[in-house]
Image (tube, rainbow, N blue to C red; front, side, top):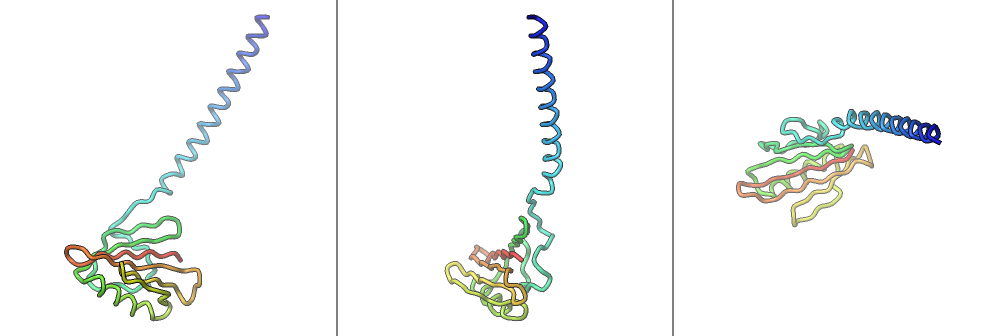
Length: 139
């Protein structure tokens, strides 16, 4: 009877060690891929397309990308109405197109004429010193 218990304990120990080893490998691989998936805001890197209109004298507050979605936020001394008016005009030039807008808050919805899947919005909010506007874009 004691040899049967010894065999069961040995088999259980081996199974536990195999399970622990496999789990350790899986966890290590997941952790190795984790840093590339972390979203880190940046104040210098741009993620909008190079042909996207730039607002004059705006300062980038942050930018980040989550999967295909790009989001950049800027500050300006101008009012939200001025920012919205600028983008409403500029986004009517090729390859961009305005698809809609709202006035509270000032938001311009846009897309690309050369890519029906590309969509985005510019939203401008009043701040103490002018406005902050955020551009979200999915190519």
